[in-house]
Length: 197
Length: 197
Image 1 (cartoon, each protein chain N blue to C red):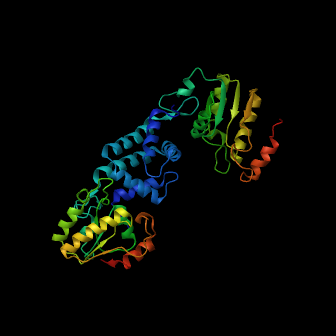
Image 2: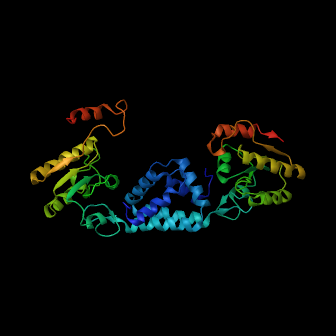
Image 3: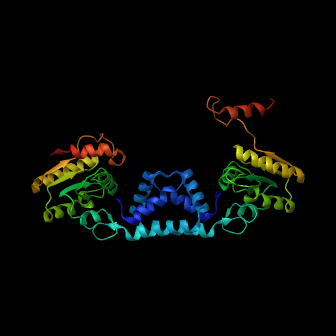
């Protein structure tokens, strides 16, 4: 049974598909949309369309970009260190952490279970890129999950074959965490990767 | 400093204005929008525009409606009991709790602090409506907040003057809470155990 006009129900259904949005939040957002000024909502709709139509993946690194090559790839002051990440959101977080090099966004991680093979990611493009574009080092910054670790190992083998210096993000205790609350696996890695003082 | 293309940053800024959406959720939603199929996002944008342009307030009760008079007001089987609520979302929740009468949406509550006087709400229209349209009873279902209680008292005085039987939602509503957040059963009890004023 519908309690709202059909168009409103449809909008709620679409908003529920957003990550982290449940039925109640979708209703609240819909009420916000109905009560907000018309020009604000029209500009939001236009913005949605323009992002969808005009924001593409950078031809070189697969970051989000309004032009063919993104602003990071076009920046000649960037250091020649290449950070390989799974997703654009990881790139943004590493950028916020102050990294000054270049990136390569894989578009996910290798997962035989989900039928994601290396050629479904941008790994072939990474290899081509490294042949043409010399870098000092590749930092493999995939997630420390089983899939991320597998992907890192796969890329590491290729880079070894190409004779390219590479590293993996350090693993251990998150800054500010308490030993009581980090998992056993994290603690295990923190012990393995302990640093002599 | 911008980490995303300008259009993406703008979209994130707009999403942050949604109720309950913080910067992180806005980023996650933006990533969802970029990775989702184009036709789904275009249909979402169209839906936003159509809701904004075609969903209006019912001429009689101020519920959301795609036509001049909403489906509840047009339903001749409805009981002649009029439930006065602050917002459309309250109407939907009372409807879900099984109420079979009619509604009147005030559009808020009287609040001298926020300069919301009775004439900024649909109280004048309620009075006109009650003169023309006889009802058996008016249930005042404003929130049990200071503003909602004030509004209820104000409406009650008018109804007394007009000689119209009326009541206030009673047992079940925890004082200080808002209708939006109490469960359906609580709301049902509040309707059953309403108190004559």
